[in-house]
Image (cartoon, rainbow, N blue to C red):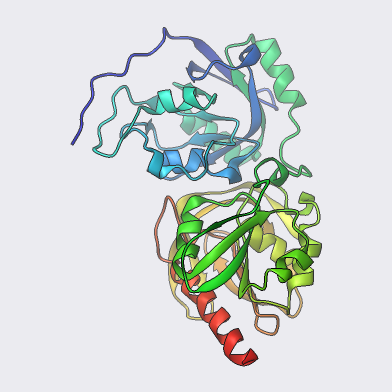
Length: 372
């Protein structure tokens, strides 16, 4: 085990978090100094006990400020191997207590230094229990934090548009195709904000060509894939330009598997509608029942939108969330397509649902046999 002494920090800088409804929380600034001392975004909370680096670097958090409900963050440092993207796309982080020292044989740096290196600001010393209870009762909402004066922060919170109706995928998707993995199948993966952990799982079963979110269906089919994967990603599925139409054109032509935002886009392509949850599902301990087997799996989740239960016809609902009954999975055997709202790759979280990648491989193998 590598143990470091307390990490030197700049002098304490007072900071304030203000929500759009006027609720105020005091704390101290951590991480990077940002222009004008203001960071703004939609404030959400995550209940995971570990995996703070993976959460902060998940592109699905674009446009959002992440509050950790676990009180002690940063104790095992950070390492390049745990990043889910090259750079974080969230707008900031809120913690109760940022660890003064990190201790782990894998760690390369302190979380505070990692935040500074990526230009990401945070606020510590916040009563995150009070903040979480407020978001739970009032719903996720825009907010702003930083070292600017209170009036400036209140104005920034009021001006922040949130994530509804905003195409955040356009800010995180790759600009050029690239290939990963050495598995036996050929998969084209739409990058709506894809995580590295997902690519590792897909790379085990396929050679994966990752393409920009705006890639036309005809271009995907021209690559002659055995299957198409629809990735996770941030924000409102209805705002992702062209995605639903592209997926609709792929259905029936090739096996399709979607996760999280990809699942929502698949649901819309199958004729469903999506709706926003009051405060979303963000954490690593959500119970989901697989209706096809009756098994209950503990899952990792990160989403604010879901497929509306009453909007689907001719589509099998395969999974439900046992906390609130929302749809967690759907399938169309006729069209060789399925999706899940939760994250079977975890990163962080439990691996109960990782078998779904093997199901995707089996679907591709079955399609190949039927075609031969």
